[in-house]
Amino acid sequence: MSTSRRLRVGLCLVLGAVLLGALSGTSSLARARVRPAAAPAQVGQWSLVPNNVPIRTPIHAALLRTGKVILAAGSGNDRTHAANHVYETVLWDPSTGAYTNIDTPWDVFCSGHSQMADGNVLFAGGTLVYSQGSVGFKGSRQAYEFDPIKQKYIRVDDMGDGRWYPTLVTLGSGRVFAMVGYDDTGSGDATVPELFDPGTRTWSTLPDAGTWPLYPAMFVAASGKLLYTGGNVFGNVGKLPGIYDVKTSHLSPLSGLAHASERDQSTSVILPPAQWQRFMIMGGGDFNTGGTSTTSIVDLKQKNPAFYNGPSMKYARMHLNATLLPDRKVLVNGGGEMHESDPVYAAELYFPGQNTWREVASQKVSRLYHSLALLLPDGRVLSAGGNQDGTWEQRMEIYSPPYLFKGTRPSITQAPTSISYGSTVTIQTTQTSQTKFVSLIRPAAVTHSLNTDQRVVNVRFTVESGNTLRLTMPASRSIAPPGWYMLFVSNTSGVPSVAKWVRLG
Image 1 (cartoon, rainbow, N blue to C red):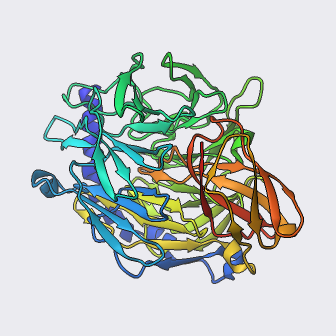
Image 2: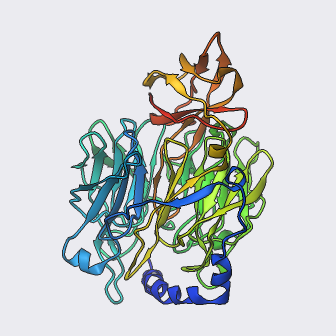
C-alpha cells in the first residue's frame, strides 16, 4: 500500500472526531427532528435497550445459535486501551438483557469474521499496532473461533499475513476465505488470500490477488464464486465490481455500477430470496463530497449480468447498515450524509417486489462510523455502536418492524434441529393454511457496514393435513452455505413466527 493511502486512513480517523462538531449545524438539527407520529403498524417502533453495553463500544457483532449476541470492541479505537492491552468482548442475551464478560486474548478491533458450519464464529486479524505518525495501522495474524456453547475464544492457526480490515466469507464447502487488510510489517497490503479449513483449523494460501480495497463487500454466488459488489472502506483503489474466482484469484469485471468511485462506507446485500441471485449496493460516498442515496442492483441469472440503477433511498448515507427481514423486506438505518456528520435518524424499508423505498420510524441515537445492525430470532433488529477516537456510543436500540403490530404471530411448535441438503422434512405450525413464506435466514456477523453472512433462503413447502407443513430444503451449498439458520414461517400478512434454530449440512 502507498504511504499516501495509509496517511489518508489515519487522517480520516482523526478528522472524524473534529467532524462530530458539525452535528450542531442546521442540517443535523433537521435530521434530528423525528418524523410525525405514525402508527407502529405502518412505520415500526424504536426503543432503547434499558442497560447500556458495558464496553467501549460494540464494533463487531454476531448472532449466535444460542440466540445471544457477541459484541466485541477489542481496544475499541482507544489508544490507551491498546497500549495497556485492555481488550473487551461481552455476550448480550436479548431475552433477559444480561451481559456476560468474555476474556478477549487479542485486539479484535478491525478484524474480519464469518459464521462457520458448526455454529462457531471465526475471527481473523485485528489490530497489532495503532497508526503512529507516518506509519499506519498494522494488522494481526491471530485467528480465533468463538464457541457459543463454551462462551470463549479458541485460538487456531495464525494466518500467513497480518490483516487489518479484512473480509471473511464462508464458502459452500464450509471453508472460510480471507482476503486483504493491512499486513503486520507496515509495508503494504496483504495481497495473498488464505483459506481456513475447519477440520484441521489451519490456513492455506491462494494465488496472489494484488491490491484490493479494505473490507470489500463479497458474497457467495450460486456458481460458488464470489460477487464483489464494489462496496469498500477507505477508497476502492480503482477496483471495480466483478465475479471473483477463489481458486485463481481472478476478477471478471461487471459493468454498470453508478458512482463506482463513491461507494466508500456503503453497504451491500443479497436481496431476498437468495435463489433469485440479485444483489444490491446502497449508499456510501466520498470523504470530500459526501454520501449518495443511490442504489445499484445486479442480477447474476442474466446471460450477461451488469449493474443497473435501483431506486434511490430518501436520504444520502455513509456508514449505513442493511438488515434482511423475514417478510423479505430490507431495513436500512443509520449513516450520515457526510462522513461522520449530518446523521440520518429516519430508517427506510425496501420492498423488493415493488422496487421501492418507504421511510419508517426514526432512531433516537445517531449511528455513524463503527455502527452495526443485525436481525434477532424474534424478528426484531438490534442497532448499536458508533465511534471515533475519543468518543464511544454505549446505548443500544431495538427496532420492532411493522409486522410485529399486525396481529397474532404464527408459531413453529415442532421442527427438526438438523436437516440435510435437498431433504424433505415436516414441521408443526399454527396458522398453517395462512402460510406465505418459509425462510432460512443465516445469522449475521457484521462490522463496518459489512455483513457477508446474512441471506434469506426460500424453502418450498406444501400444506399437509392439520398443522403440518412439508418442507423441501435447498439443494445448493452455494445458495445456502452450511451452518445454523433461523427457520421462520410468515403468514399472508407478512407476520413472522419466532425463529427455530436448525443446522443445515
